[in-house]
Amino acid sequence: MRRREVVRFLGSALALPFLPHSAEAAIELGEKLHARLGDVPFRTLNPAQQALVTNIAEMIIPETDTPGATRVKVPEFIDLILTEWASDDERTVFLAGLGDIDARASTMGQNRFVDLTAARKTELLTALDAARADKSGAGLAFARLKALTVYGYFTSKAVDQDILKTQMFFNGYQGNVPFTPAV
Image (cartoon, rainbow, N blue to C red; front, side, top):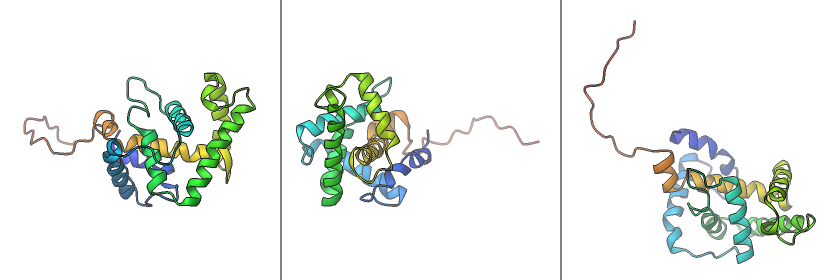
């Protein structure tokens, strides 16, 4: 995957009103925020919201032979975005939507999303994915959480270097590469 392809994937994240509207500026911002994650504690998400965001982000991009969302600190990235880039209204709507996700989990037999079985979590997230166009509540929160997860994941250094394999420097002239002239 090339950097331009990542920019295409970030398109959904760029729809978020508090992110730069230029793809290059959004990538640069994401990379700068990731560089700060070790120094910045959670400031917006409370422990229950942290667990919810972490659980959903890991379901969106799970750990496989590549790092998952949790390993590249996507939940911390989302908290930093909410703290420093989202307006008070956007933050309030997002946090209310997280509460609505837990409220929907309570109709499925548990008080919180994180306590649902894997099958029930998938069922609820599938329903929320279909409701991404909602203007408030769980559908909107899930849409933003999904976009921020993708954005945070693909702007992380680990993903850029280990998965996307972006070469930052030219590694020299290879004059011995075979050349076949066009016919």
